[in-house]
Length: 455
Ligand code: SF4
Ligand code: SF4
Image (cartoon, rainbow, N blue to C red):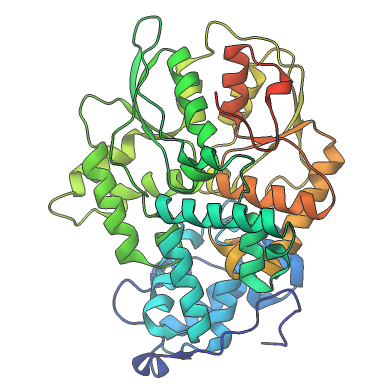
């Protein structure tokens, strides 16, 4: 393993817990040896991997990481700080999964590895505290609102001060949306809606945690679009975070605790579909049948919830175009969120709902599979690497010269807004369903702004 490239976060100065000094992994769901042995080390996945593209470092490629997992799983290497740095540098974007001709399930291998690292590696205090505060605040709309309010206040007192802070704090200040009007932070989830025509489907809407605070208009637009397409939209009260942020960071216990609460709330025989409009949440919820399989109390309910969960674009595609759509003459670039395109395989549905809109021209970005660097909390824990990827993605956006950028994940929208603003550019950024709702309601392009107003 050679010297670490510059944009990588510094290697953790932490140490393995006592037991992990001899054996890297414990017996609690380590990476499956059969899955590890599926890798034939051909290297076809390397060009697809953003961290390999950035640094050209074998151990920061899928093949290199799988080799490290294999050595650790066989007990041939302890869990070293350097090894953890290579695992931490992985975005979890899963671009390597479809690129692999042998069908290696890197997603499952990474899931197990992240959980082992969380259990068996002790990070330095500062890192632990930062990660803990992120995983406490982000899934919690009240704390997130307080953070956004503090950022709004600080932004008014010293407009660029907090953004110059070093490391993750500065990244958080750059990423946190600064609402024009703090009252926007108090907006609640949409109220239930019925279609004007016959009810063709009953849909429960998941409002998300980051989504409802940072982009509340997306939830409103989701309800508008679904109702216009013939769905009765229910919004289960008392819903919280689905646990995706924690689960994808390796915090299996807290993540699945939140997921169980969601399953109890959304397992309703009267509901045909569960609409998710944040890619990271959808990627977890669709997996809940597998993840809670052994749960005597909630295993069957989790399988039902997972089977009904869809990205909102998939539900709209199933329902077909709403009967009335107004012209929206805009050039719109669509960015594939990794947790939607790679983790869920949803690529055509968001494009399809945009193509329904009369007058809209859909633009494709170069390198569509390349992650923008958002990746859950990656842009807050590895801001330098995420910044490099964000800039690269922002350049492809500017090259396409769109009037609006659309993406199906709040993390990507925040990351790309920050990356574009560093390049001195500002674009209205929306979820595809917001454009469809604008077309349904007859709102012109003037209704779209970098912080879209309410519907
Ligand atoms: S993960 Fe797949 S593509 Fe990559 S080296 Fe292994 S077998 Fe080849
Ligand atoms: S998940 Fe993404 S960053 Fe990680 S190894 Fe695969 S392609 Fe590379």
